[in-house]
Length: 438
Ligand code: ADP
Image (cartoon, rainbow, N blue to C red; front, top):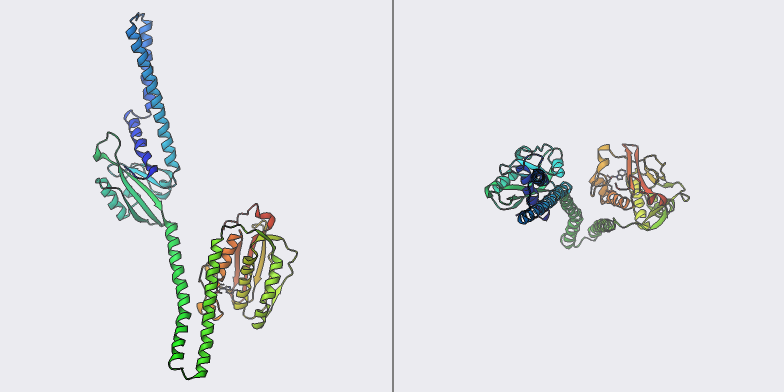
């Protein structure tokens, strides 16, 4: 018997279906019983109209009993039909694709989810016409041969490649020959889970690699200072300076990793403060002014103190804006960075935009869709030379997601880039825009 609870409906459903089939097309159990009742009623009527005097008390009682039995049979048949109908409805709603095959491997039932997954699925055709995965077909052959229930992983190739987990089990309807078993197959689409595992593995590998590089450098210099450079104060000072830079790089990386982790943990917590983006911008610009000066440039910010309020986490919004301005300073070619309100657009009703624009090297179009991936960099060397971790824009993206906002990037090579934070205004927050779930 199948072990999955929802699957326990199947034998009942299909044994009742068998009764339907046995009585011929369109004659369900209720119809059968109704026909029998009609026949009996006709018989009784005929007997009465013919004037047959049935004074025999025993015959009367027998008739009454038979009529009662018939009523009960009709009620039972009605109940059975209702339960079959309910079973079908339940299976149709099941989000997991589910199939039933006959003893020859032909599909005799498929719920809508199965039809969506296997586009070429046809009733009455062998299932191998729809799904040719060799491992699955081996498992199916085994199940048809009377093998025990089993689960296997199989990939569905095609445009929409899917990592499937299939559970196969034999089902024998009551009173049926055990060799004529049906095969029940329940699929689970594990593509998203597999992708999440892959992303996690990649992330850990990337983070370890990023940390290992400065660590190896620090260890190398420690050995040099302990060995060949032991008596060379000048070299030692130089190496210590490099070690400091590498340690700072590790610190930034750990800070960004922790930051990302914290933001992800709170991703579904609704921000509870109200902020004016313009006020935040003024504070961040003031804080980063010395960094701009160090790079021989300035940050030109439009006064936005009268701008609309947004619902937000103050620290996180500052961090997002700070990351964008720091990037503009890092990759802006030493030219002025501008911070200004974005013009409202019709496709973002109720959203407030803030743009950070630089006049630097710009970014080739092919990189734009991937810039917010963790550790994705146009040039790893260039990013490292600028003290980058490759996590800044990933942090911004996650902060925007928590705030039901968005980050848009426009860039032209040799002309510069414009990064815009979009946030729902405090009023619009309660009625989310179509962008809210991006
Ligand atoms: P990083 O720490 O490397 O700056 P980010 O996640 O902040 O990491 O940015 C990812 C990459 O996007 C950067 O390495 C850089 O290649 C590119 N990038 C980000 N901002 C700009 C910008 N203003 N101009 C040009 N390239 C940029």
